[in-house]
Amino acid sequence: MSTRLNRLVVVGGGSAGWLVAAIVAAAHQPHHARPLSVLLVESAAVPIIGVGEGTWPSMRDTLRAIGLPEDELFTACDAAFKQGSRFDGWVNGQADDSYQHPFSLPEGFGELDLVTAWAQHHAGQSFAELVCPQAQLGPAGRAPKQVQTPQYAAVANYGYHFDATQFGQVLKRHCLERLGVQHLIADVVGLHRDEQGHILSLRTAEHGEVRGDLFVDCTGMASLLLGQYMQVGIVSQQPVLFNDRAWATQVPYPAADSPIATHTVATAQAAGWVWDIGLQSRRGVGYVYSSAHSSDAQAEDTLARYLQATGSPAGNTPRQIRFEPGYRERFWQHNCVAIGLSSGFMEPLEASALAMVEMAASLLSETCPATREDMPVVAARFNEAMRYKWERVVEFLKLHYVLSQRQDSAYWLEHRQAASVPERLAEQLLMWRHRPPSRHDLGRVDEVFPAASYQYILYGMGQRPALGHPQPLSAEVRQALQRCQQLGQRMVAALPSPRELLQHIVRHGQHRI
Image (cartoon, rainbow, N blue to C red; front, side):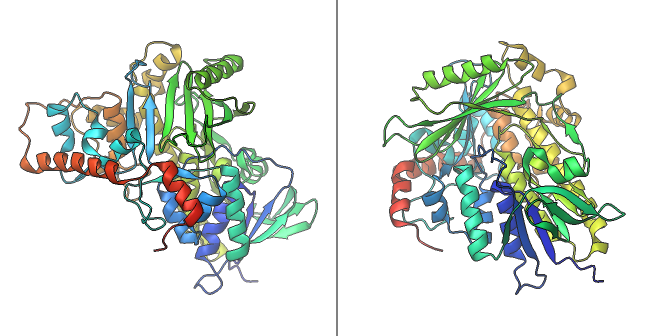
């Protein structure tokens, strides 16, 4: 009997399941060197969480790779542009407490020492606004591209805000109509496994046995295959990141021409923070919080007060989401791989959920074993790579909390206790007191967050590196800072508002590259 892997079975639909199916199917078409058939099995009875509405710019490359036209995202998913995040109230909670994490790198990043120039000569100015032209676009209400810019191309780097449920449906249609993915509606009620523990087939209530060679668990937080059947546990991150619940709602805009924000707004609260995401027709708003520091009723009231303070019209009834912050002890066991919420979940502070799906699915697709004999080696490397990525996500999210100066609640004070800070992050922070984060601190080619992202958070949160005696600005640095400001001003003058651009795209589409 041949041990070659011919069939991959994805269990679970939604954004994660259909994204995995699309990435693998697009890279392993029948005419490719290593073809692989893809079957997606999903239950008609399992609801989709549907609140993962933010992405990184990497999603543009992913959608282009699977052949999905960007216009479909804007016309079918209520999608809007995301140029980064804005953090309000995270430093000290004062009225002027706000900073940005833009998606574009600083001007001359990696070549010029802009941090020293900022710290010694412009410390009174926002770091992001000084070094990154994109930081001017959000406050000015400008889109990241022009009407004539082709699909997926950008003037300023961007990702998306979209309706996650609609996104899953668009991916499903694309998979079935263009990528040859097979689809089966069925409830998985058990597994047939061999003596070593490998899955031979799924037992379904409606269609009996479903055979496969490699199985991907995209069943959400239930983690039906890896978590329940294979008993792979969670490495809890509750001692590091306290948030474990959220109230989520959707609210309409006050008017049809209301501005659409092109950044996720994260507003700090006494026991967590509120996300505010702008789509074309509505906003997605939610309060993610720690149940150890707030009751559910208090949290729901906090969300209501935020909506009232922002002049939001009445939306739908908030629904609660509960989760355990953490990731699986292993992500690949035998011939089963968990991707998406089944592999782990952290609070959506930097929209890492779908990005982790992209990274895991791409890694699976690129390193997919050709035979059963190859699988142990591939699985071990996959587990090591994904564990590294999850650890970096935990550290990066914690960075937002550990630098806060807020004194108003136990939640913020306990986030700064040394026992809650990962050892590697504590070591990095010691070094970063005297120099900026650099590529030398991040040892992999495929790091989750670039050094620039650490700089935006560090210096947005008020960190000031101790750099010794002031040095005069070099001509190169002075020119780079001037170029940054001039470029930002030109972009503000030339770019349309997000709503203007989105209306044009929906009506007329975009140029194809």
